[in-house]
Length: 253
Image: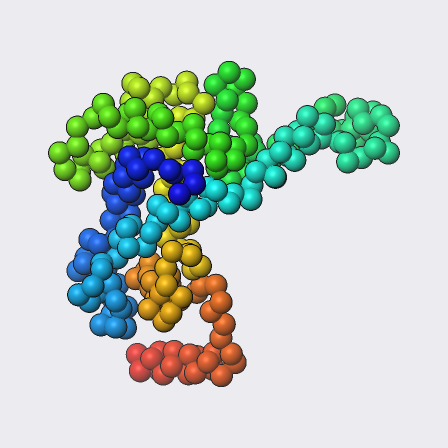
């Protein structure tokens, strides 16, 4: 493992992810959409069920953190933020030029404030929102998460869901909102990243055979989402789908 090298951290993340994404109970929900090929889906048979563990979500999260491509972008954007017009060396008197165009005297580069960076948190000292690399972000979270977890009692799964709600509400005394990363920032980012991992179609932790291809798309299949990466339709398939749709509509008229 990379960033998530501690077994206790992995166990805590797994238990939190189970409550945020209760895949097993979701599949068994009688009101839920049932895929037309349900009898052929491996997780609906006698083998492993659809779960955080069977989809290797935490291992995939570890890889996502380790291979985060936003770190180079974060360094570049921080450099630009200190001198937003450094790409315009020909603009010798930027304040005058901006005044002539009825702009504020000082230029600002603020993609973080407009939430155009994957992770950004408010620095408790400067009160500025700063871009964060996933590795930096999560490294600050693990000690706080484990400290908060060890001071709780978890008699059942529902207590883990309550723990997640406490994190979201920033109401844990051992994880005050004055920390570099707030507990609410952590749980929201964690939920988003686990969702990314569950919808990933190229997880290296799943088989590459036909069964593995089904597991890669498991959550999408159960959600009735047929649009996915590498799913290409030719004109004949489109015409057939349109004909089937017309037939169903005609039957209702």
